[in-house]
Image 1: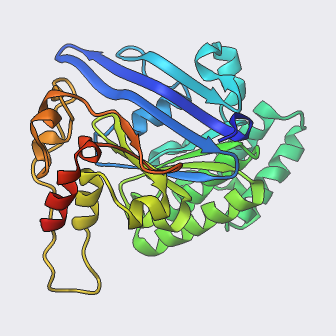
Image 2: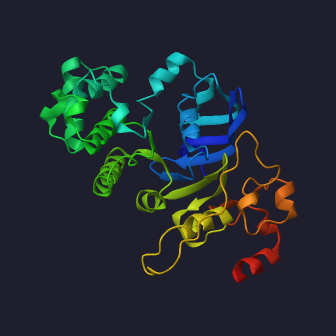
Length: 333
């Protein structure tokens, strides 16, 4: 992979939260690369470290208690961790933008939506206020909202329309990287589909790279080129959609797929993953998934696995790929 073609390059990122109850090990040495004009889905259960990873990219980890302990975060070839406060303010909204989970709380209730879109444009581009206001109306139109509604306040919009406004703000300056953190969580299924289609269309229009954070594998299949599966602060499997969806390797990823309903077999029972995500203040000594894994052996409980590359695009963290007997056992289950 050519580094010049990377919009995002994360290497060995470690993020902890120091609390009175102990050190919360939220992100534990992840590597993630995203090429320009591509999209990747970051998937996992609640508490896996997905949102912390996104906040680290923007340097928005609350400090205290959050601390970026080590690692490298490169955005379009420049180190985010070496930027000062003023430089970060110039980057946020221009080079990288984020759509937060809840559109109800993401907008300021005392300013019109037009003012909030125009604010982003005025901060990052040398334009007059009237030009920024016109651009704001254009962005609303692109987001599927009539331009005249720029003078309305957030409370006058439905949840789905608020999320459209948030997307318009995020893309107002034609950002290089868009981070979407569960952007459809609070929306009903019909509106979810419309919002995803909008994001896809605007991503194509502005040639924006996308990091989609979600627990919904269906969304990943619809909008992403690649997928990274996260568990207890580690990326345990990543690859193209074909790699991960059709040639699943990690037992956790297998568990995620097994816990989905089968539309072709209504009588088939779901197979939930046993147990719970481990306490991030007290992670297992070995593989973090070993207490829940039906394939776990002694080495899984004693040592942490290293990344294994199945091919040029497909990576998995699992001792099983050192042990041919594992594959026989897995086929038999």
